[in-house]
Image 1 (cartoon, rainbow, N blue to C red):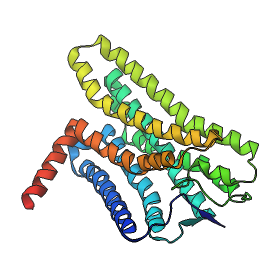
Image 2 (tube, rainbow, N blue to C red; image 1 turned 90 degrees about the vertical axis):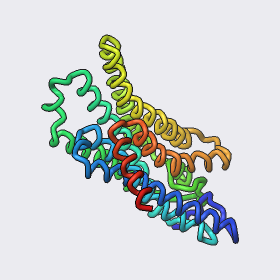
Image 3 (cartoon, helix red, strand yellow; image 1 turned 120 degrees about the vertical axis):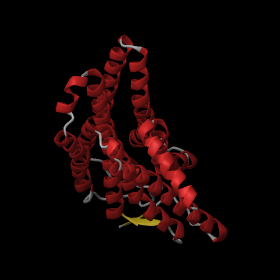
Image 4 (cartoon, rainbow, N blue to C red; image 1 turned 180 degrees about the vertical axis):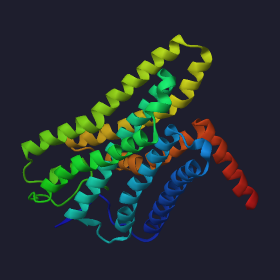
Length: 302
């Protein structure tokens, strides 16, 4: 079964320009995120839980972009942008699993900051390498496992529509079905609570606790807490807005205008994967120092 996407066929100069922009965007995302990941691996003073979680978050963006951009480039070069239904389900599975992983990674980062600031004496015994590995594995495996159930059940669902209103396969894929299973809808709601609502509530709880503790402490403690926590909160707010739009697409029966869908798709595919390395590269002092040295060294070579 083939499904036609929202992307319209392009010709001539338009096709060349969009192809050029798509390839450049993908390369920029890979390079910007991978650079900080490599710096974290290379420099020993970045071998701390907080930087490992940041590296995992940026690696998540690389995987997310890799799941989307090759198909988008294929659509740009095709006379008629289509995708097989199994491929669409796979893209849905990967994209949403990595989206859930992002929230869980942000929750792990907030817990790391909470222990570091509120329980500094217990920090070395709590944030051990084993516990860090467990948190990372859970952040990637749990969303994939839960969403695989939805993808598996929907693989045999009968389709009544074959025109997909989106550039990427998101939650609106359910609009293609002849009828929706009530059990799957309830299960999807449980996944939504587990992978989005609970992590966000946990993050808010930890940062409220951090705010209360630092408010009672000195000015220097408040400054250091703000320096490390603010980037995480900015990334959380940004990604939560994008995630909320995807939920609205699933819940609301009214169609959004094509331009709105296009803008939000671009936000998800381009803005957010580039937003993370910019925030962490500029706002995290230690990462910024190594990044600046790396860029200066490359400029001198050129």
